[in-house]
Amino acid sequence: MGSESSILATVIDPQAGVRIEVTTEAGYPLAFETSDAGAARNAPEPTESLLAALAACTAMDVASILRKKRQRMTGYQIAVSGEKSDQHPQIYLRIRIEHRVGGEVQPEALRRSIMLSATRYCPVNAMLSRSATIEHRYRLRREGRAEETTLVAITGPEGATVL
Image 1 (cartoon, one colour):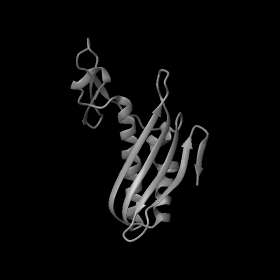
Image 2 (spheres, rainbow, N blue to C red):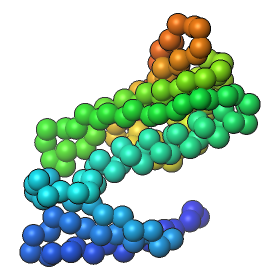
Image 3 (tube, one colour):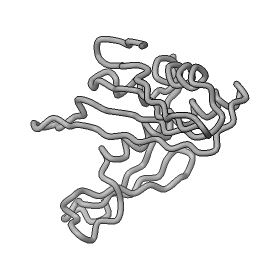
Image 4 (cartoon, one colour):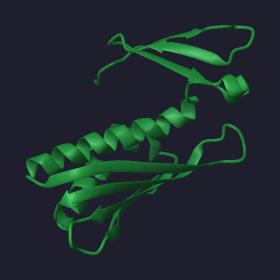
């Protein structure tokens, strides 16, 4: 049997229903708002936070694996974009992840790190892959060399394809 987590969410103004404040099991506060909050909106929508969680999850995996492989990154960003269904419940159908890495990193080490995150370690990717097709790629910039861009893997409802 797996572990269990719990969250407490409070609707700040039940009549408006546009802001939700959440306390995680570990006591961390989070806030979410709907687009109905308009120009005063100052928190992400819940689906935006899913993409943020995916970016954070895979970044933690990849950075950890690259450190263990003694790869020297000078910069690391994750760009994530998602395409939602037009029909409710407007789930993500397709998600694109691009790892933007700078430094003296070997392409094969980066490819392998991303592949391991996508297919084995990142639980957020595993959950979202149940309903969305997710492309995992990288853009590598190394001093004195041409920039490299490679598609590493595609995960989704049909399983994983490693390229």
